[in-house]
Amino acid sequence: MHEMSLAGGILRVVEQAQAREGFKRVSRLALEAGALSGVEVSALRFALEAMSPGTLLDGATIDITQPPAAAWCMACAQAVTIQSRLDDCPLCGSAQIQPTGGHELKVLELIVHDDLPGDAAGDAAGDTAGATPQGSPASTGQAV
Image 1 (cartoon, rainbow, N blue to C red):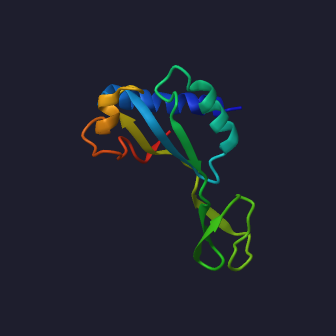
Image 2 (cartoon, rainbow, N blue to C red):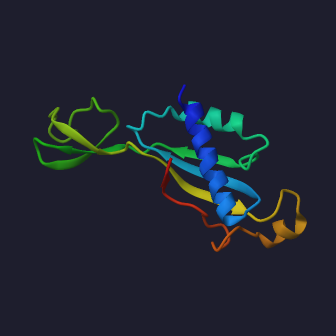
């Protein structure tokens, strides 16, 4: 189950962002695992939830999307979407397709706060860390 090591890598990315930005907690982590990334989304979610107690991800909402992969069909010279490396071209049926995207695991969004849970002053103000506006991500598009 390599998803546990992936979850550890994601937690390190969050910790590095915290060291850089100085926030105290995370309320939302959004990830994207491409269809060809080899990531089992339910196993990754389980691993992140198992690791989160006592970390910056404790209590955070974890969203993981799995968009289709991109490919190039050599037979009809068209860009197409696929779900598996074994898919044929959805336009012409050819098996001569070359995957061009969907291998990535990315941190898309990290919603962070300068307060700890239950801090009435910070909750009322909606403080977020760093130079990002309220509610905007501290980190986007970072591959793990």
